[in-house]
Image (cartoon, rainbow, N blue to C red; front, side):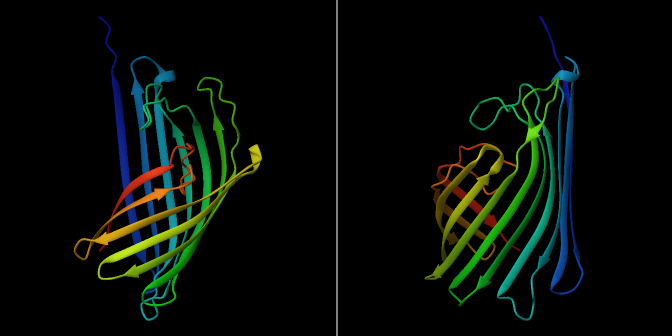
Length: 217
């Protein structure tokens, strides 16, 4: 018989600092690494560091804004699988800047948008790592409609541009939400695109129905 051992360590941290009643700094640091008895080739590592600047005005709260920077570095282990039960192949290191804003036009209607840019690199080889560029730009336009009591709907149009492979992907997303109490809402929707609005996600398998749970303070 053969026996292998793997030791994994995970550190998770988050912070929020209120500069003024309207402005705050938010961030998180997630870091993990694993050691395998089979050798360094089978080890893995993960780092996600985020710092953001949020505008949440108290006196005039119709406009909300969040700008953030993300550093992402991921070395999946050789036996790590995705949710689709396929091998996680890419070694990725990325710098991502994003701007997200929402404006309440009326009590029932809001419009918003998101712009994000990824300056990234990926490698397909674990031993002789040869990184190639993987830049991306994401643009999202969004509209929210609150109707009846405790119901919300959401519609988005999205565009993802991948200049290094000369591709541009477009599509839409729609969802409907129901509040359960004051601090939880449950939504179901359909993503007509195959990409995520999270630029650290390099897979293109997001098309279809989704369920979303959102908790608020």
